[in-house]
Amino acid sequence: MGVRAQPGSSPQIGRPTAATSFWGSSSADTVPMLGQTQAVGLNAFAAEVVVVQASISSGLPGFAVTGNPDASVREARDRVRAAIKNSGFTFPDLRVTVALSPAAMPKIGSGFDLAMAVSVLAATEQVSSEKLGSTIFLGELGLDGTLRPIRGVLPAIVAARQNGYRRAVVPIEVVAEAALVEGVDVGGATDLKEVTRWLAGDHVLDTVHDVPTVSPPPIPDMSDVLGQREARHALEIAAAGAHHVLMTGSPGIGKTMLARRLPGILPSLDIEDSLEVTAIHSLVGELSPGRPLITEPPFIAPHHSSSTTALLGGGTGFARPGAVSKAHRGVLFLDECAEMSVKVLESLREPLEDGEVRVPRRDGVAVYPARFQLILAANPCPCAPAHDVDCVCSAVVRRRYLGKLSGPLLDRVDIRVRMDPPGNTALMSGAGETSAEVRQRVTAARAAAVERWSEFGWRTNAEVPGSALRQRFRLPPQVLRPIELFLRDGRVTARGADRALRLAWTLNDLRGTVQPTEDDVAQALLYRDRGAA
Image (cartoon, rainbow, N blue to C red; front, side, top):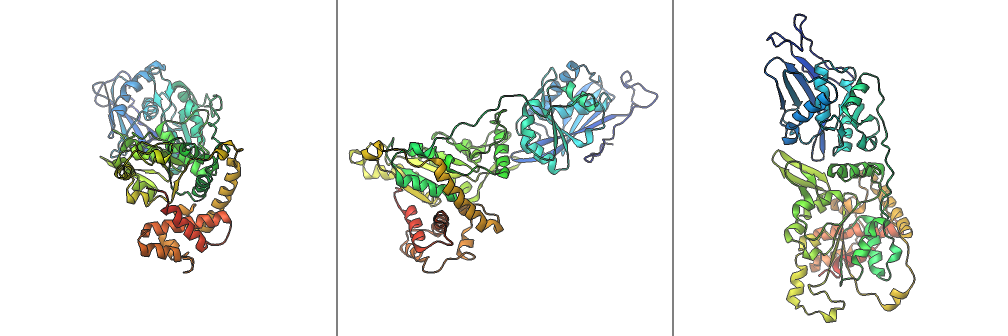
C-alpha cells in the first residue's frame, strides 16, 4: 500500500479489520485506511504530476500535510475539512495525514485542495475509487465545498497528458482553458458534491462553461499613420524577420502609434505557439473565461518605471512570469526607454540573445520562454522639443540621455530609425497602406524563411545562429564586401555582422529572391548604423 498507481489502474485502499469499527474505534490495532489521487504541481513554467495520498489512522485527531508544502497548501487543511463537512460527508475524527509526492518538490498554491479532499473521501470509503487512478484533480475549495478557479490550468493539463493521464476534473470556470489540450477528457465541476456524484457514475461533468464569448481588442490599423514612410518600411522589415527596432524622434511624432500597430502586421500564432503563449498568461492569471486561447501575437508595454522583477519575472515564493515572458512570440514595447533604469535595460541582454529568461530561486532556477520582438522608443534629449533647432540641451546632456542604451544592448538591435516630423503635405494626404496589405507581404516573407530553415527548426531569420550564416549558408565574397569594410573600419562588431546578415536575408525574403545581394547587405548595415544616438 502507498505505491503510486499507474494511469488506468485503481489505487490500493486499506480496509479496517473485521473486529473493529472504523468510525467508533480508537484501538491501536486499527488498520490504516489509504486513499490516493493525483494533482499537478507547478514550478515556474515546469509542471509535474503530484501523487496525493491520504492515510486515516488511530490516534489523537489531527490533520497533517507533508511533502514540502507552502503556506497556502498547509492552510488547505482547514479548507478541506470544512468543504467535506459542508458538502454532507463525514470528516474522520482520527489522525489524518496527507502526503504530496515527490516530497522534494516545493508545493505551491491552492490547486491541490480538490485532490486532497477526494483522497480523504476515498480513504474513508465515501466515494468510489474506480476512476481515481487515471484522473487528475485540480481546483481550490471554498469552505462550502464550491470549486474555485486556479492559475496555470493549461500547463498542468499538458503535463498530465505527457504522463499518460487521460481524464481531468477542474473548476467549471477554467474548463474551456483545460479543454484546449487534445487527448485528455476534461470535466468541469462547480463543487465537491458534483465530483463525488461523477465518481459514483450518477453525474456527467460539464465540458463547456456558459459565458459570453469575448472578442479580442481590435488592433489599430497602419492606415492611421500618415507620412513616416521610412519608419513604416522599417517596421515591415522587422515584422518579416522578427528583428528588434529602436525609434528615436521628438514627442508626438508617431513612435508609439507605429509600435501599437506592429501586432496587426504580424502573422497569427500557429496552434503550438498559441498554446505556449496561453500557458504563460494562464500562469499570470490574465486569461479571459470568454477567450481562453490567445491566437494573435501579444503586445506588452510596461511603464518606464518598471523594476527588473516586473520585467524579467520573480517575486516571493512562486516565480511569476514577467513582461518579457508575457510578450513571448509577440512584441515588447519600451516607450521612453531612455527614462528607464540602466540596470533594467541591461537585464534584457540575455533574454534577447537566448530567447528565454532564467530567474534564480532558492530551490533552483525558474526558466520561462521569452522570444519576443523588442521595440524601443526614445526622445533625442530630455527637453524633447518639436524641432531640433529649439533644443536647449548641451551635447554632453544629449549624449548622456541616450547613453543609458549601452553598446552591448544596441548591438542586439538590428534596425535603428530616426523619425523626423512629417510635412504638411503628408498630414493632409489620404490614408496609407492598411495593415492587411502589409501583413500579406510579411506572411509571405516568413513562409519563405520557414521553408529555408525548417530542416534546422528555426522559424524566423532572427533565430538563425551566426555560425550557420557564416558557414553552411555562406554568401559569395562579393556580397559580403560591405561587411568586410565595416569590420575593417570598426563600425560593426562580430555580433553586429551576424545580425546584419540575418537582416539581409529578411530583405531578400521580402523581395522574393533566392539569396541576398550586395545591396541587401549594405542596406542592412545602414539600418544598424543610422540614427541611434
